[in-house]
Length: 270
Image 1 (tube, helix red, strand yellow):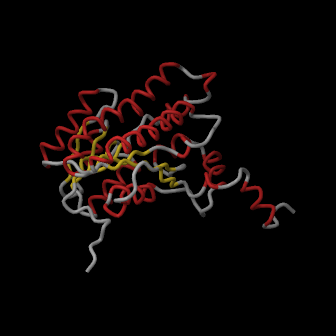
Image 2 (cartoon, one colour):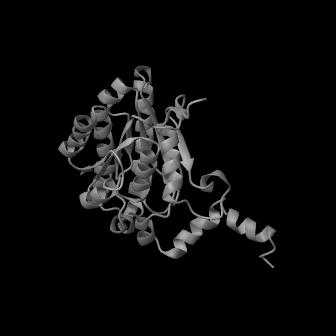
Image 3 (tube, one colour):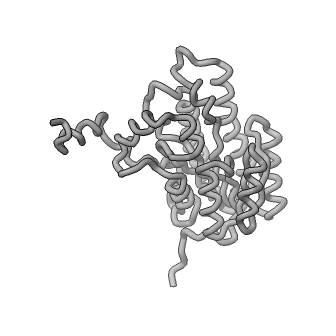
């Protein structure tokens, strides 16, 4: 019998933002595939609630603006489980208030720009730096959550999108520098994903605008992104590194205005 390369038996995975929509779905999926999971989140009570429902799972408080908090997360993981195989950098500064204030560059508040980069870029770098010695020892890997907005221009979220573009380049840099040591590094770029935070941050009319440009019949769910993360984290992706897997339902794959073309050729223009 051929072994299932997607299984994670005996592996230890850290998931930042692990109590949120995508992070929570990823924690549940990796656990179901046999991994021991560390649910790291600034919302510790929510992380603890999720960890209590999973076997071999712990919750850890994480503040990505604090270097000591990030390093403590990795140290706690290794102390608890004796190893680290997967670092999933999923947490980001993306609450409803942040999303509303993150517009175009002309009207950008410097404090918002700086905080976005502190969490999304600097925090991710520190987590990778702390994890790499342990990943080198285990032959493990890193999966970063970025965004399809890091690959496209938009009239909003200039800070968020550019910070995620920086994480894409960091992904490639780590893959290039540490591949020879057996460490892979990839990224998943979701499109608009129906998490509770997104529902609160974006009104229905904006969600509909994106859904109309999606090549599927719906927007993505957290579980869809979790599947992409789990694949890249597993042995099934053993020859994939330095790549960005776009999981946006095809939004970034077509010419602009496809919704209007779809309506025209279906006769809805009449």
